[in-house]
Image 1: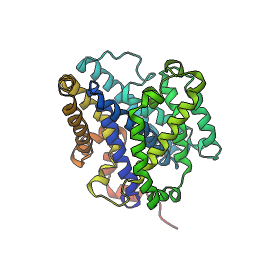
Image 2: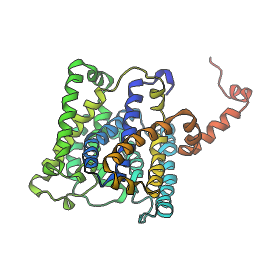
Image 3: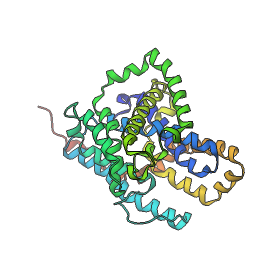
Image 4: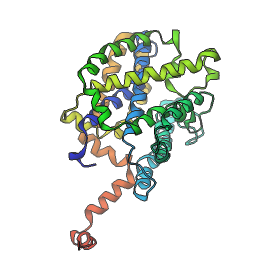
Length: 348
């Protein structure tokens, strides 16, 4: 997509959401702080649904043709094959975490989203063919909790499916309503209310439900109400997602909007930095200074996301996120102009 045709609002939203991904993962460094659980639950109640929704919205054009299948391999499959073992061995050998095999079949930590998004994209032509797939996806999501497996993150693939399908079916004219004054006014108390709910997550749900990867059998909620609780979590996630997105500016914000085009770099590399900070002993400091540790961790995570998305850092790291695409781009750039023009058919 050329810069002129990009929607700056979507790039702003993507940058906000990927920054929250970094913050959410960094919260694991301050688990001893009571406030960290509230921040964590508040973010996870809605930011994953928002991320999935945007992914679905940006997947509308996917079809089973050669060009798009090639792009899918280049931008999702190959990064997954490369970064899954890279992060696994970094965590095990450098950080000393007791992570276990198998690789690729059971995605580790942040890598789950790549394989799940790849699977969603593969069935996108079916999911977008009729609006009935939206209510059907809700039923599938509720049933997804019956699976208790880490293989290919099937519970998340099923559980988060409604947000992806909703993104496929909503059109720009629908999202323009997020800019309505009444929606923005209502968004603030809505997020405040979700913040209050996050403070009492264990009273009405379980944090594990916010991940959409835990089977009902492992959640201490009565079978009679576990489906209702999952449905409530989904509804809160959707309201929170739209509320937060309505508050994101629609205009081009310059450097921040540009950073929104580098979300894959942020996503793939932030885990290495967070685990390095963990290996350096940051959790010990946060345990001794809980509130200071929490504030510094959140601010540090925001700075990390912004630094990874800056043009100089992006230029260095982006070839690793799409190595084949980068090599093809280099090859095309070196191709003589005469060769390129001679291969272009003349117009009639």
